[in-house]
Length: 90
Image 1 (cartoon, rainbow, N blue to C red):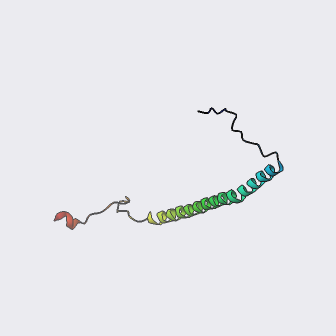
Image 2 (cartoon, rainbow, N blue to C red):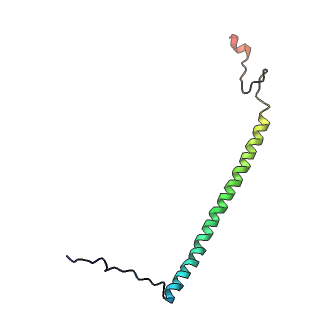
Image 3 (spheres, rainbow, N blue to C red):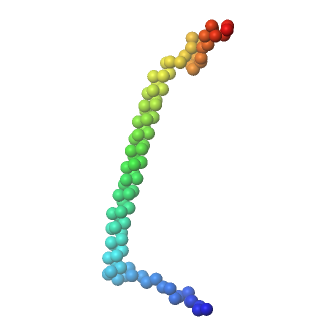
């Protein structure tokens, strides 16, 4: 069996060379071109979802306002079913 020393694998730091600097800048620019539109789309989707939910909440509140006047019996209680007296006797 061969023994491998810990220092056998070394990663070279190529950032100090002009090619390394160019590759780093290219990677940053490419990352901005790819990642930034995705983040903007996620932000836009979140804003659209928030606006839709606000509109639906306002619609539900308006519907609830118009429905509060209905469904009351003679004593003013809401959502109380009143049986027909003809059914009780049979």
